[in-house]
Image (cartoon, rainbow, N blue to C red):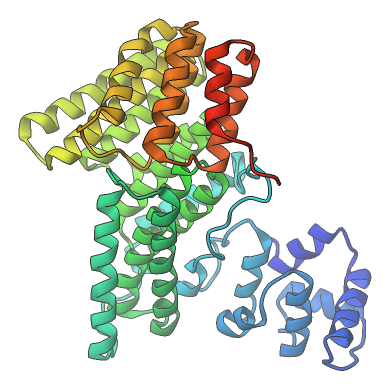
Length: 452
């Protein structure tokens, strides 16, 4: 695999001599002194034979927008993965938890349209293959020897776990805006990152923190998805998969793979989603009710996007069987049961919509809208706004413009203020029908789009 410095240089489209001159100029401009601009230096750095001096690393980091504190915190070559945008190479010789730290904080996009995914196709498949190999070799997980920890440090982790569990409950139902939930989840994720860096690469402390890093990354991924920020959701989900696999936790890794598949489905990347769902099944053959339901729903949507109606219908039946089995066993709370019903409804509605049979989706769309917005009913989900995109689109496809307009007003009342990306998607759906009074009023209810 190419050295990360080679990747960074390739992004700039520079030869080794040109890159050497650029680094030397940055070194001088930062007040770090003059340095020779020789191609041989860059070649040796990229081959791994020589580690650049710290001042040279600062100059390189400056060129690629990585803060100096991250250079000192992570060390060479690991800080460069903060700049490549492709995630951490899984075949690195070191199993260092610092590789799984989060990259930056939650960001609102500069425009209403998010950027594309970082990993697709063969590159995504290669990463999942590496993660499955990691899970298959428990010797690569952090050891179980006890690390020396102060009572204060243990208590801090205990409290982070308690707050993380509370946030996980908010993933199902919540009255709080998703942007606030994302900020809270990211705060916990960053705290875990700092503790993980201090704990080092081995021991029970690192294993516990890696699992907690995966859980908090899953929260960040889920809430980012609820805001329509699919690129951010993908990056957090990749962090969760890596951290879960490195900790040797098959359940968390499978859940993260399933969540990553959901993001690809929302972006209509059906082939990649199917690969991720297969990887999730390989990672953890024994699935929880929620993960089994998500895998069946995901497979149904992916097959439907690919026009494979028979396989999509079979996957929907399996999802219904998984939910019915859980219902009979009375596992979980009433809140969880209601959330699973919503997931099942949106899964069926999406499948029939993808297959070009919106009339089959009508019952699920109506039931979903009522369950989300009925006065005095159950608490809404953070995903309510995202699901209403399906509801509006489904009724537009059926020509039921009045129902579509009513759905816009209902979700606007439920959420108060729609996330910018989802509001933009709704405007896009409604724009061809703005000559209709009801839909023009619905567009007005969405407000003026935010300026880039």
